[in-house]
Image (cartoon, rainbow, N blue to C red; front, top):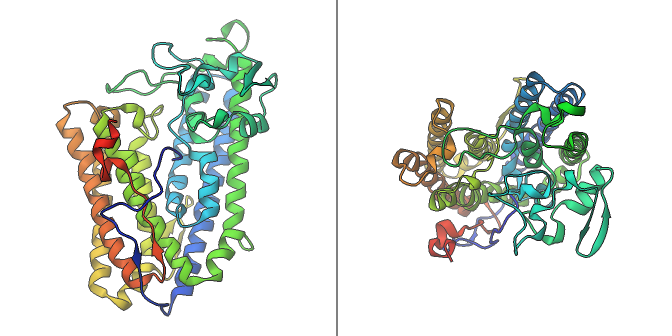
Length: 421
């Protein structure tokens, strides 16, 4: 997510200065880099498969090709979400992440929307721009020629236009919107219902501008693949991200713990989960158009689990494994290592409960409905587990890290009254 996140340490999670350098760090960090290479490599593989499915949809729009493209998008999220634990501690990842996973978005920037639900506002005059319907417009007083929608137009002109973070024009969620359309079901069951005829030719085209809609979808997908190629290269042999963590193993350990703590606490427990419960707002779903949020939460949690235990299962079923933080911590404090591992396992069980419920028909947006006690209990049990595992990560930092660690906070956890101001 790239949104209004305060880059401060949570009041209840103070800055921690850890211990000195520990034998075995180099092996742990090398395995971490290997997992990074594998997970971003898999994200690229699945991104390429998504691209092929979208090409098929554009070439021959039908119920079947749209369904296949949607399925490819959902599959593409599985490895990508497991990569998010590499954020926060690795600046090269954080600087890049907003290109591919920014949310929530003002979808009226891109395409038609229900006028009763969104559009231009004082905060975002471009929220109703509808680039697909308009080949020429102005942004910040500058004329824009959008007669051809290209990856460069999306990346350089449209994404975060007017310096408004809600103007998300690229990445997974822009593609998600173009495949599913708006989810107008509120907190009732059901995802977006964009018809395949939104990509049809001639008189079969629905909602106008089908050729430009296909052009935008193709350009956004090409851009996503290009961005994934970049990050996969950063973790491959000779890549800058890999070289950076290997050059200083102690700093690499700090990066690992920072990513685990910040994703656990401020990002997932706070901004992605508790905030939605507080606002009872399905727009706060991470994958709100597709109703895939339960999977996004689950695989984010699994990414944290992977880094601690030093294991990642690739999309082809093979496993990357090696020396781990769990091993390193066990050598220093076996009791703490077991407690942290248990906390991570408990979180995965809680996230698994959400995933199972959603797959049985109790969708995440229904869980967010006002007064839905069962839904709130499911989500908040996972939030509590994520907070608890962050406490254990905090304890591990004091043993394993040589540097201060700043854990990302969230008003929803640290200052709930501010959410409603």
